[in-house]
Amino acid sequence: MKWILLAIIVGATIAGDLLQSYEMKRSGVQSARLRGLGRLLQMIVSRKFLLLAIGCMAVSFFAFMALVQRAPLSFAVPASAASIVFETVLAGILLKEAVGFRRITGAVLVSIGVMLIAQ
Image 1 (cartoon, rainbow, N blue to C red):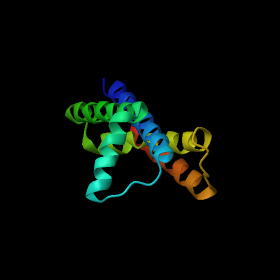
Image 2: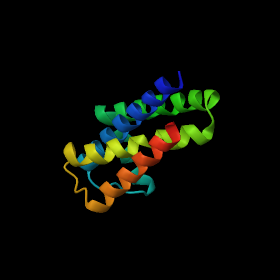
Image 3: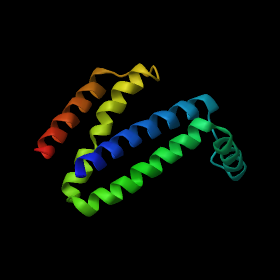
Image 4: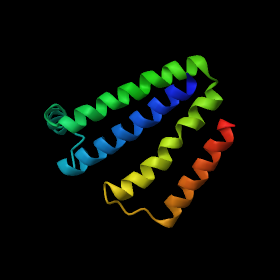
């Protein structure tokens, strides 16, 4: 069961982060002032991918809560970091972000750590 929950966490986190990044890049820079927050809230409810991103993050959160009930936190947190590896790759492919050598190296190191924890 812990592996199913971990897969849900990783998948939902990846989907949520990619959808959020995509929509926020489309919307442009938002203001953190009170009036800007009102516009940001309007934008959130009008963007279907942003609403879907929020839903994905909620699924990830609740799956993580279930995981830490069944597995040690020392497993749950590092293992869920596998999303970093996939997000780095998918950010380059889907979002056309520049993913340099240092980021790739960092993602590889994270994946090695995840494999060590999973053993």
